Each structure stands twice: as structure tokens, then as C-alpha cells.
Image 1: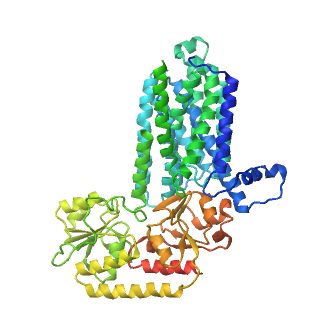
Image 2 (image 1 turned 30 degrees about the vertical axis):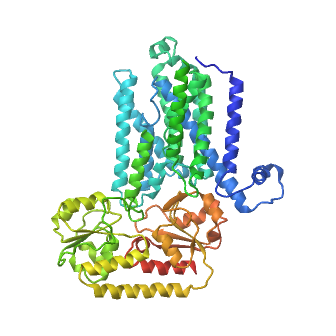
Image 3 (image 1 turned 180 degrees about the horizontal axis):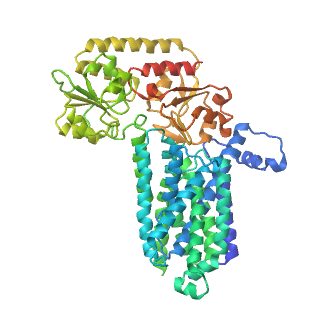
Length: 340
Length: 296
């Protein structure tokens, strides 16, 4: 554990940054709404103050900006924590939901549902359900392909993950190119982003992300043990293969929910855990919660940039996460290497 | 990086997917002849292939539909052209199929892949590229087609008729307060027409103001931007192929947009996508439809 930072001040500082970014993202947008008005609107349910603002302002703050910010936070934390878990699970810095095919599987499921109007009678949860289903099927396939006897070596898992992921992406492209009908919905969804998202999307993502995050957190200690190698973990009394399955299932659920509401957003799951690890070290009891907070901050800020930079048009958020994330990550990596 | 690659791929898909709506990013680039310059004309055209529905409609409106031996997947008007063999979609033209039709002349547009046009030329075919961004382009294209197919008289009388109708639209709304309008291509997320689009041109000519004229091309905007700009009229294009529900109903049901004047007063209209998105003679139908929506 290289850089050890006192936990309480760290959480405090991150929570403060998160709160400030969250508040800023509610204040900033195409239409100018004064700080006092925003605060008054937010506190209205508590204080029951007589409205001095227009109903348009209230709609913008409560129905557009607030859910959008919450959704960015949920998706960011979900992707970041999934990335952290996957990287530890495979002890490979390249592991993320994309590499293992979970995202592309989920994307294919969602694409198939949108394109052919398949319904499972789940209403709002139709799309996430399809995303889970195909994400889970994909990772199951990857897992089976990678299995050597009773064990699943990491390198075969990554290799089959990359291959299956490419295959699923190709299937999605094939669906798109051969579809005769309306494909606007799927094209926009595949670009990823939070434009036009509402409270409904927040409600879809919330339970899975919170549940998944908590589940991962309770598995921090076994995850720590896994870092010493599967054999050592086995000697420490951990059922490694079962742990792997539980963790994979968890990441499928969390990633599936994130992908279903926002479309695939790259870079968050890969970069956030690395940046966090550079600062707090590899102890999962710290790494996981800090990744959650950092992922939320990252996507809230990225979304803010995506909707203000070329306003009134919106930039695809994947472009923002890559453009901001990559140089920042390289800068950190270089600096830390210099210190060592 | 991966993500950028993915973004690029998706952008490519997007351009490929919305061919009827999107301008070719290569339109002003190298490799294309100046669409305005009249090139060499084959002595007489007996076999013609068009790669865009707008050009097909112009050819047929000039009474030269019999010359057509090939069309694109999207060419479906007038209905008789569907009997003509297709050579693929505007972005997926099969060069081989075009060559096998042995045309004397091929009509392409600035939306056609530059590589396709080059490929056809390399095969020794005569290719004409038409620009299609404004109503004026349509008039010029009709004139050029008339010239190329040896029926300039038909062309000028067609143009005359269309111009009369355009003038009538403008006269009918002259002096009225221009309503603030928004043209919607998709609702989730909101995808609207900014300046330098065919629909922006139509809104202006029909006596309205495009609320997103400060942005260029077709853009994704947030619900907030729409609430903020408060369009008084919303015009939606209705594609025949839509299989995902009714954009109008969904916009009316959107709680976030309930304060937008157009939705409060139900001034939200659907127009036929094929007439609005195709720079052919029916664009005047679209102009009349826009005028009816704006001044209803």
C-alpha cells in the first residue's frame, strides 16, 4: 500500500467536491437561472416559500437538470466501481466492462429491443432487462470459452472477452445496417449521453447501482485476498471460483443498468480506478468507495462540459470523457512514475 | 483510443444512417467537381441512373422518367419508379450494379459518397453531382437536368410553376409577425435542425424564425434549450418507416416540455418526411406545408 491517506479527511474532501460539482451542474445550463432562484427552488419542498420564479425555471431545475445530474452520478459511480472490481478480479489493468464484452453484449441486447420492439412486459425496465440478459449471456459465453478444465485463467478470459466483444459489436453494427426502419433511437443511444433523460431513468438505474455498490463493498476483503493471487486466496479460505462468479454477476448488473440508461460511455470504468489507485493504493475497503465518489464526479463534470461547450448543441459525452480523461490520466501516470 | 474509435465509427454510422437528412461532410472537400459548373454533356442520353430520390423526382417531373434504367433504394416517387431496378442506398451504392446497367449518365449528389462518384468515373461513366442544400439549389438542379436531358423548355415551365407557388406562399404571409419555430427530426434525445439545413431554409421562406438558427447543421439539444427558447410552433417530420411510435404524442407527453408555448397551445404538426427532406420539385409542397403550420 503505497500512498496511504487518512480515510476520514479523504472521504470528507471527496464528498465536498462531489457536492460542489453536483450543485454547479444544477446551476449551469443554457438558460440563466440565478443562484438564489436555484437554491429557493431546491429548498421549496422544505420551506414552502412563495414562488418568485417562473414555472419554466422550476421545470428546468427539478425535472431536467436535477435528474440529469443524479443519473450522471449513478452511471459514473457504477461504471467506475465495476471497472475497479474487474481490474482486481483479473489482476489486469486493462480489464473494464468493455474489454470483457459486458458493455457490447448489453448494447446488442438494447439494440435488438429498440429495433424490433421486443417487449418483456416490464415497461420502463424493458431496456435494462434486455441489456442485463445479453450482457450476462455474453459474459457467460466468454467465461465458458475461457475455461480450461475447472479453472479460468485470466489471460484466456481477457482474450476471449476481447474476441466476443468485437463479435457482439459487429452484430450490433449488422443490426443497424440491415434495419429498414427507424434507427435514430439506437444511433443516439449508442453515442451515449444524458440528453433528454428524466426521473424515470434515475429510478431504473438507482436500485441496481446502489445494490451492486454495496455488494462489492462487502466483498472488499476477499477482493484484497485475491490480489495476492488465486492460489494464495484459496489458502486464505476463499472460494475463488465462486467469488469470481459473484463479482462477474455484480458487474453485469451494475454495468447493464448504466448502459441501459445512458448508452455505452467509455473510459470511466477504465481510467477512474487507476487514478484512484494512484492516490489511495489498492486496498479495496478504500479503493471501492473512493472510485464510486470519483466516478460520480467525473461524469457529472463531463456531462456539464458536454452540454455547455458547443451549446445549444450537445457533444457526445464519450468524446468528453476520452478527451479529458486520457491526458489527465497520462499526466498523473507520468508524475507518479517520476516520483518513484 | 478505443472510445474515440467507437465515436468515429458511430459518427460514420450516423452519417450513413441519416443520408436523407445529413449533409455529406465531404461536400465541400476535394475530389468533387464544382457542382455548379456545367460539364461535358453526352450527345443524347438514353440510359440514365440516379442515385438520389430528389434527382429521380426531378427527372420524372420533367417527363423524362422513361430514360431511367436505375435508381437508389430511397427513390419511391412517383410510384412507377419502384419498377426500375435499384443500385443500392445512397450510401451503399453498388458500383458494379451501376456499371452493368450501362448508363450514358449518372446523377449523384453531394450526399453520395465521394468514393462512389470517383469509382464510377474511374469506370468510365459520366457522373454529374448536384448540390442540394437550399430551395435555390433545387431550381438550379431542375434547370441543369433539363439542359442535360435536352428538355430545357420543360425545365423552365416547371421552375416557373414552382416559383409562382413560392411567391404565393410568401405573399400570403407578408407582413405577419414571424412565429418562432423548431423542426424536430427525433425526440429522444431531441434532434433538431439548425442553420444551413433545408428545413431552416423552409422555415425562413415560409415566414418563420428557426429558434436554433445560431447552431449549424442538425444538432442534439437538451430539453432545457427548448424550454429556454420557447418555440411557438413545432414541426415534426414523419417518416413512413417509423416503427417506434409517434414523436408528436411523445413530445406532448413530456413533462419537461410542458411549459413550451407550442406544446401548451398544441401548435405541433407533422409533415411528410419525404417531401421535406428531399430537394426535389415536391419541396414546394413542403414549403406550403410549413407555411400552413407556421401561420395556422
